[in-house]
Image (cartoon, rainbow, N blue to C red):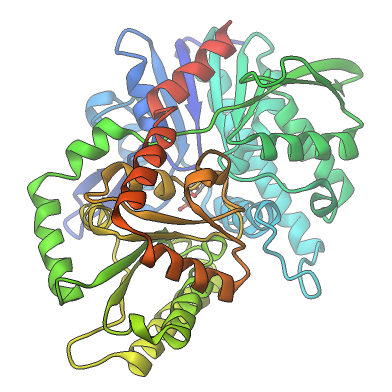
Length: 493
Ligand code: G6P
């Protein structure tokens, strides 16, 4: 049933919303707005469309904001979108987000399990799974309540894999899309999940009319998993098109069809180029130049969340190997590594963060001299400083073990001042679009990565600039607003 409060024609649902609140000691709430593809996308539909973004309250500040507002935040409150924030009980949220979404689903899709010791799909897992179902149901309830008849609902990511199916049961009139921002696991790897869980995840997403992915490779992996888990039937409808496949699976005894699409989110050139030349970025640029020292020194830049899949440790090991095997680079290159905090509730992320810090220190102790610090590591998130590093990078190191897309690989060539060589993992989604003009690496192979860094540092200026121009063109082919609007139009067609 559609309640009186309903009415939104376009709805977005994601775990992390476009705004988060921190609670000061004086009781004041401070809002922090996020960026990214969805934020630009949703603002691009214009103020005439009634849109709502449904998200979870992540911390105490958000929960307090929900208590004070009842959970509905106006566009003025959030400085952008109308938001419905869900205050899901803290234990349910922790089990769903830390327990299932980040420790199981993220690990499966990024192939990060140490299979001999993990995973233990035991009673604790089952209890956490029950919370994941509740958390998904809370989103489905809120969306069902907020949506106007026939509205378009765009559900995001692995946190909300069950929402499309649950929402279809509640509101069969809606047009439902799901987008995976991560890779999808190959069928043989996905098969490690208990069989009923594989079925629930596949059927959950197939509750959507459209299930979209960042690359063809992840879309095909998903299709493979649906075949194994559900016996879903795949028809190649429009090869090379943005929605090439049609999957048919039984839902409640009846065949339900889901269009499988590929939308490779690109960088927002206009925003980045303007933002990267504001005074705060210039300030950080001079500060970084000070840390680098000598004017002739080259830079290898990386910017990541401190995330296991980003492979920061092997990146540092490759830099150490470069300095060991190619002593001619000593004193002549600085590795600028920004590793921003992420998912610190999980012990394995805290340990990884410590390991990154220790290794950077070891390299500096081993090779550093009175006026040369080989690794400049920053761990405090600062967007303006990231842009400054993008501008001065001679080499960008993007070497994830596996990555849905990797926007840093796309952003650096766009804002680079003098051209930058991209050393890019062949396991990053971005490789499908940028591989030709990047130096491709196997992310596990530290020696080969060190060699690629050497080749990158040695490349002549002209070739570097030409490659950067082509990289920037490929990286901006599908800017965020178009990425979002294309999906919305396809869903509403
Ligand atoms: C990835 C996921 C997003 C997630 C982001 C940050 O990009 O696809 O859904 O929001 O990481 O992770 P966090 O756990 O901090 O939200």
